[in-house]
Image (cartoon, rainbow, N blue to C red):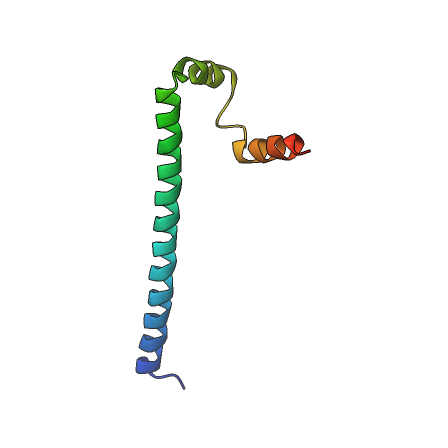
Length: 79
């Protein structure tokens, strides 16, 4: 029979694991955010805003998986 104390210890361990996982997700989010902000800065400082706007007008961000498209492009570009 499991005691309340054992259950509490199990729940505490589960909470620690979930908090650790959440911290990893937060770190990954910050890394991705910084990468995107770096790309925006590159676009702005290299006068590419008009080109980005034209791209957005002809591409649907909601229906296209650009991660797969980018990987496919990179693979096709390999020698």
